[in-house]
Length: 338
Image 1 (cartoon, one colour):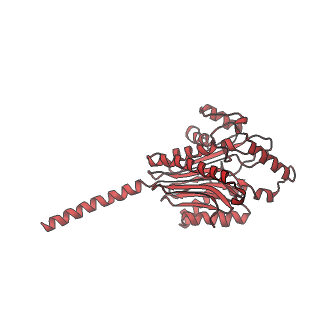
Image 2: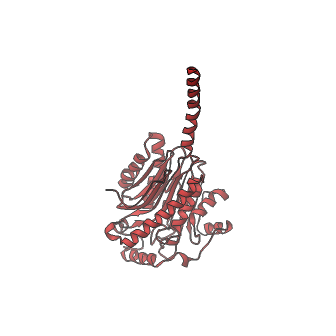
Image 3: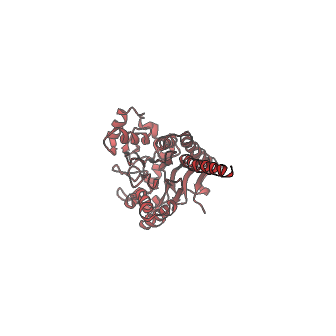
């Protein structure tokens, strides 16, 4: 009788243990977001404005978290989370996009699926209310990866995405910023690097891992204030501003785009993990603090690996950022960790 009981317990434990492990693994999910990095100092921030940023970051990440919690896809979580920030005048994306030298918006966005390595992007659009949704539509409903300018607006119209006139995007805050940059401009061809180094690179982005083990990454921006000649930064460029691969991680970047393009920031973090077996935090640290910084660039990244580990790395004084894991633990920060 004792032998029968022992065998029964052993069989029961052996059968249930792997199942519980599978269920535990399947329930793992996480999401991380950013609202831009740069010279963000507490001494320059009013309490009222600080509260607005924190509340909006919380609102955005909770939208994505609820989607993931219900078993939704990382793609939907990233899109809807970024939509919240695109619809806010606080961030340099969508409604709050900065203005080019002509006083108009030029909107960029990109998205990548870690499951399929499919990607979509738009650049230089001027009418798309939610650029990240257009980037996803490019991925899903076109044979292309990137569409630009008027073509991007026309494509968005064909997809029945919401379009807005230029007046929707222009805010008093961005007009003041444009005028300030123009005052500090050295010439039509050279911009004061010291002035640029003291700006906030207001890209928004999100990376999510869903219960199915799929990673998605997205980035959306208005680019650089006073940009000329249809300048394009890293945000819409797959591998520079956005990257996702289920084998390693997902990344969304924010910073001085020219340096992030040259450093292939988002892909390099994934490559360091895949080929050197580095952790997500160490890979992000090396790329931001050693590679980008060595070139003279600044900014930050958010990154999430396939086990739910997160990195929020920057070489600036601040980065609007938030993270939630599958247990509901939430981190919302603005300033760099001391």
